[in-house]
Amino acid sequence: LIPGYHISRSENDTYYVDSESVLRCHTSAHQAELLREKHKNFLVIGDVYRRDTIDATHYPVFHQMEGVKIFDPKDWEESGVSAVEYVEEDLKKTLEGLAKHLFGDVECRWVDAYFPFTDPSIELEIFFNNEWLEVLGCGVMQQKILDDNYGEGQKAWAFGLGIERLAMILFDIPDIRLFWSDDERFLKQFKAGDLSSKFKSFSKFPPCNKDLSFWISDTFTENNLCEAIRGIAGDIVEEVKLIDEFTNPKKGKTSHCYRIVYRSMERSLTDEEINSLQDRVRSAVVDELGVELR
Image (tube, rainbow, N blue to C red; front, top):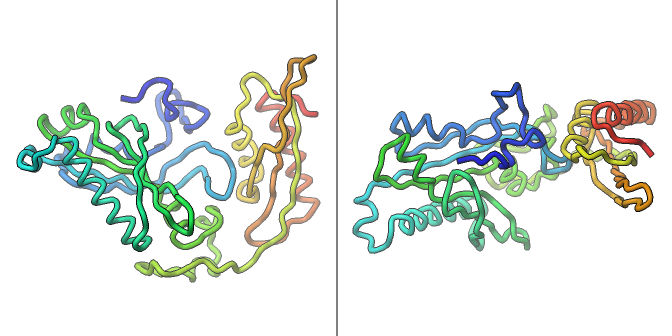
């Protein structure tokens, strides 16, 4: 069900332990085993790992929740609609109810999408704080998954959502790195079951911007650049952003210039430590990515 070209198989986007093993990149990995155990309805919550860009909303580890509900023929046979229509309508009703429980009486809309484990596949968006926001992806489960693992003749829906993403929207949390902080000034702002809390900024240390320009190689990817930078500077890196790109027609080379924003959430950074980190980053991108510094 997952073609060879799918993003979840790419070494650029997925953490490979070895040629046969990867770190879990979505909780859908547990669908088959739970279906074989004959669970008719279930939720799966777990940490997942993805190589990604560095900014306020992306982090290499986050938490995902997967939901599945199975239907028998008797559920849709008297409805007057097809099995797929019946299941999709129940899915939309359920998830719109979840969105309204979390965010209040928000306007919802559905957008066609593609996911390897569902067909048809759709995404839920809500109009919140005067903008449309993507909330989750879902759809009618691929029939082969059900037939091979649960039994023939059934239908099911499935959804997946990023827990940190929802929490950032709901509680006005500006930076995903905060979820990994032990700072009591952050942790004490929230209580279990209370959906009314809003994040209150407790400090804002100054950023330090450093630019990095180089001629890219044929194998260069932005995700690999971010991994190299994160491996050296860790959570001190707030953002890595492409700010300039041009191609030299005589040399046939393409140049990228990235702005690296260094900012700690807990203290002011010194010029000495940032310069040291930047020197290590410059060496690493040459050694690991094969680029030519400018």
